[in-house]
Length: 238
Image 1 (tube, helix red, strand yellow):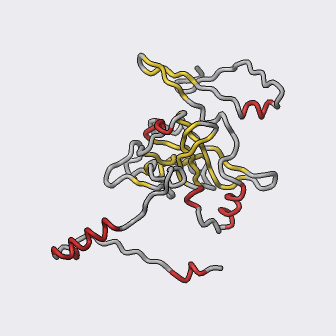
Image 2: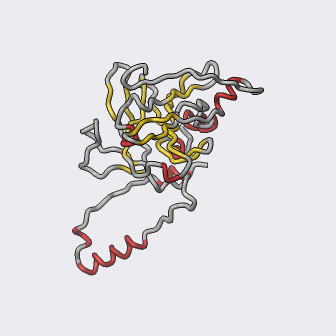
Image 3: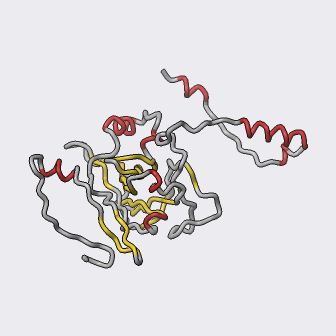
């Protein structure tokens, strides 16, 4: 025990015929954690240090021509090395550090600090922070519907919890998240098309039916209204 919240150990390790780096990246282990009278298994989010975003995705992000940027940034349920977990990525080039906080780690920024994504020699820091949080060997282990945010420490040392700008779901106001009373949290979505067996069936049949019903009752003009604006010529790029 290094401190009240940090534990460390050195174990003997024989990599066999492969290189030490390759063997370490494929090593599978769990940390046993007491939980009352029971014992739980804690999976190490830093056991596999390989990058999460592809180089092509970084090229598109930095060029500003990424049509599916929401598939790269934000929070996405995925499977990595046979383990189900959540992949987080956020762009914060001026931050001193960024950590994932949420219901699943007690909103403690020390629990899940994110990795700075760098590129080859001469390229340096990309501005992207990324992290894969493993939760278990089955899809049921994923904390779908839980709340989360990013704890950002600025270059001046100030710390605040920010929502995920690419989150697929958000908490309904005016509920407040733990440790960040001035914002509403992002939510881990169960409707991520990149992880679902079948794409979400988008449709407006229910809305059309309800609109017709309210129109016949004379109540349609009394309903809340959302106005969307779009610049159609911008979609005509070759």
